Image 1 (cartoon, rainbow, N blue to C red):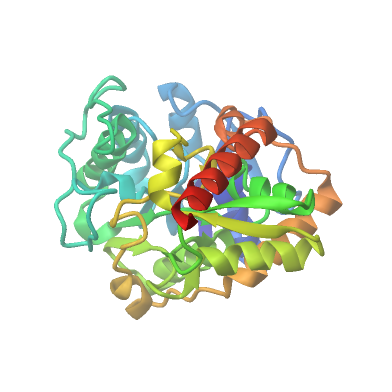
Image 2: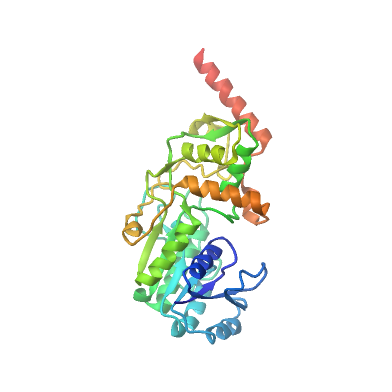
Length: 345
C-alpha cells in the first residue's frame, strides 16, 4: 500500500506514519521540513502546501493508494491541493474535528447531526467565534471537508472527526499537564464530579482506524472518539496518580463553584467542560466500521513514560493556554472550603 501523508511529523500525523511503516506500507510525507526528519523509512518531500508549484511537484511523485491530510485548515487550500492530487491518488482521508457540528459542544450528536456551513472555496477569514458555540476553526474544517468531497467525490473521500486526542507526543498539553500536576503531589483541585464520563481517543487508535478505513475503502464521515461511558474523569486522575506513583489527593469541587470562581473551562482545568455535547459523541458508526479503543489507563501510562524518557516540554502556542497556576488553584480550593464549611454550619 502506497500512502501519502500531508504533515506527518507532529502528533496525529506522526502516529499515522508510524502505524503505516509498522504495517509495511510505503510512506511519503509532505511538509515544510521545519521539524526534525521523521524516520529514514519514509520518503520525505519538502514543500509548502500553499505553493501550487510545490504541490504540482509532489503530485509528480505519485501515484498513491491514499492521501491522509492532517494539515488542512483552510478550505480553499484543501480544494487546490486535493484537486491536484485527485488524478494520482485513489482515496483522500481528511482529518477533521467534532467542532464541525452545529450543536457542539452544547448538545450530544451523531454523524447525522447538522454541520456548520462553509463553502469549499472559502478563505481563512470565513466563520466567526461565538461564546460556547460554533468557532471559526469549526467553520473552516467543515469547509475543508466539503473541499475534499468536491475534489475526490463522495465515494473516494473519508472524513474522520476526532474529539479530544491524547497519547504520547501530545503537543497541546492537556494530559501532560494533568500528569505533571499530579506528579507534583499535594491536594489537587479536581473539577466537577469523578463520575463524569469522558471520551478521549488514543492517538494510536485514531491512527489504526485511519489505516483500517483505507484498507476497507470506507467512505463518508466518522466520529472517532472512545465510546460513551467507557471512562470517567475520576478514573483519569486515578490513572495519573498510578502512572506517576505520586502521593497526590483529589478534592472534587462542583461545577457551579468553579464557574462562580471564573475558572476557564477547557484550559485552566484541561478536559473539564460542563456542556452535554462535549462528551456526548455517538461513535457507533466508527465502532461498527472497526474502531477499537484501548483503556484510558494505557494512554496515561504510555504518555507519562514518553514524558519521562523524552524530557517532554511542549513549545506549541496552544500549550501556553493550558493549566491553572498554583496560586489560583489554592485560591479556588480555599473558596470552596469556606463555602462548604458555611453550608455545614
